[in-house]
Image (cartoon, rainbow, N blue to C red; front, side, top):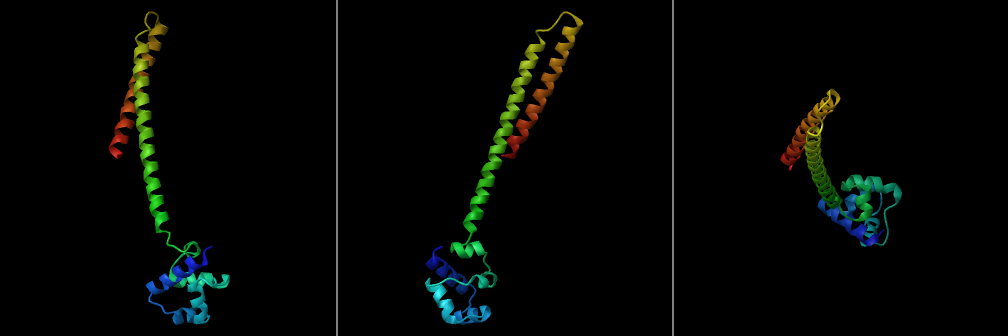
Length: 148
């Protein structure tokens, strides 16, 4: 923990709230010299005062001890979620293309079987499977492309 950074953060948040050192000290039940020591980085708030201090300054405990707002964390989280969503769409597109290719392969295989009733049955199953795979592949690919 960087006491100076924390102190400057306390001072910044106190000034953003238009609170004097005296007013903050009264709220926390400490002297204004204690607030001054915190802001100069000479000491840190006692653990029993941290929750009240955070509530007064409207910051989280992690923001207080990091000495900065966590807004950059929120931006990074949003960027990460966008990247994950893009990867998910790319995965779906690849899956759809794979289904289309498999459907074409099954269609080709269905043309190889003919002759007996069993071979005609297998040919029909492969033909039906190929049509189904291609339709599902087209649907998945199209829906993923429209999401982008």
